[in-house]
Image (tube, rainbow over all chains, first blue to last red; front, side):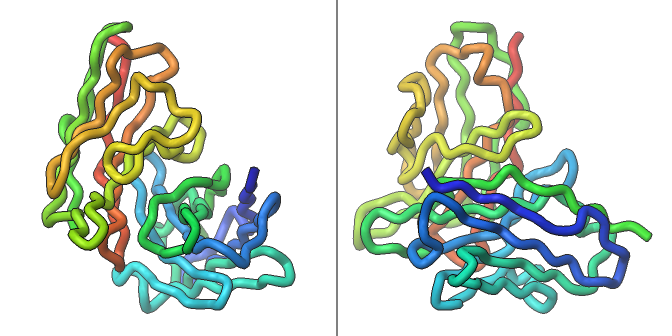
Length: 123
Length: 113
């Protein structure tokens, strides 16, 4: 059973860069696609982007200029960087695995999620 | 693709049926494999979302059979045939047909009447 765990600072100052890591256990990161999704307090879900083990990425256009997702296969983890943050970036950030049924494609649902980590953007 | 759910919230008596609708602004049906790229998730307070249904009507592993999904193209429905106390939460539909971006509905809050 794969498990995902987000880690990183819970408080980031405005204009700085938010950095989070998702550690994957119980399975190899060198299969599947992996995503970041966020949820502002009391609101709905927003997809941030995905990556595969080869580093192929795709980002939400609304965040494209500020977001970078990277992968470290040696550590079995992937990371999110979001630059120039504002209060609007305050949210619970989830990492998630994209479902794979044999051949792995990015256009599938999310079948495993981390517990999420709350990041507050405040001075 | 914009996903719109109705209603925003509903209160249902225990044992009664709950129905949630989801409409996409364009089709999420892929002709080449005859599949609708639509999933439903349940989110309980303080927890991450959990997939219930994918391919619009395929129940995920371990999901009780009181949950069912139907629909095609742009109109979809999640039905809870007999609401249980543990089903309280927020339900989201999500399309994975087009990217970027993957998009979710705004959520439907289900409560006990």
